[in-house]
Image (cartoon, rainbow, N blue to C red; front, top):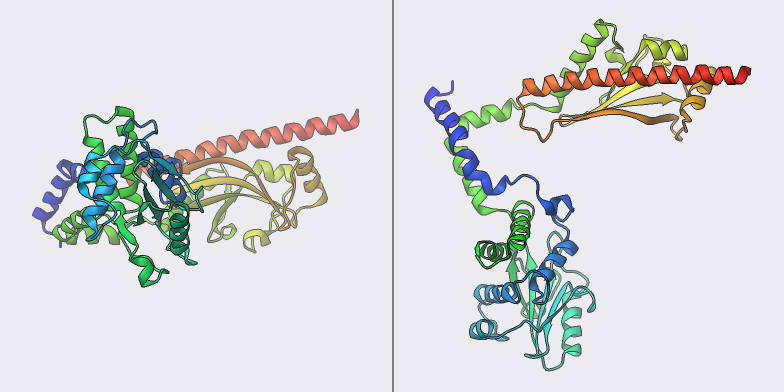
Length: 402
């Protein structure tokens, strides 16, 4: 039995404090996720190259570059190529950034004035291979004779290269996306950062924290809350809604609609993947002959309306079986719908309304009410579709007689 005081405290926490504690991880829509940049190395390299380039339109000049170099110095015991005072005092704004144009190096910042290069190999969910680090370093040394070169191996957690020899690893300074995130946080809170650029920086940093970093702060907060309310959370987790609950509710609604003669439903028609139903109107139009002693398509039905479902999402399709069709049925459907069939003998080109409550913060009863509405609206659309089908067939027959 759950302690009532614990339950009351947990509910108070959810109401008054939880959103504030988790706000930095619950930022809603993220522009970088919309663009598919969550963990794509090439696209992350583009954003980093933009920030590192003093000549770009972010108005930061060499501010990000300097903070980046200072993090490298701070996180590596020995960086003889450059000193802190040099980073702070020199103006790197005349440097140039190259993106994969120099021997496929992810990012290369080059400043001819100070004969200085910053080379970054960006690895998010892959590692170095085929001796690539040695190839990159050799290319830079041969192309920029007399330059000071800082080689950076950038990973989510500051890991060492995997494929490189011990000797090669000594050339590469390690940096993690945690350090990059810290720099972005500083720039976001810097009053001199342009408002539009600050928005981009915040969105990018949110994306890094949510999709790349194993955020230690989030883990610690989650662990603290879990152990504080373990008994309650375990009970919730053990009884959380699953796809099977969603399926059961769909079947319950379909049975109810079948009893109201809105559709024809039998669990025999269904598989683990699809829920299926028919309508009297389309049965009559196609002169559909059914053997209810068999299951699924073995009933001999020439069609089914199929509901696909997963994770509180659903969609309705008209699926037509070539194998089960009579010549008359085939002619009616092909003439009116202009259907084409796959090699498996099915056509699912007619899609109706879809349902998605996977991202909505709804109570289960609200979700189920929305599901009922979804099926009713689909039946209305299906009815209109079937009437249009019958009308087109009638017109086609008249044209044939004339």
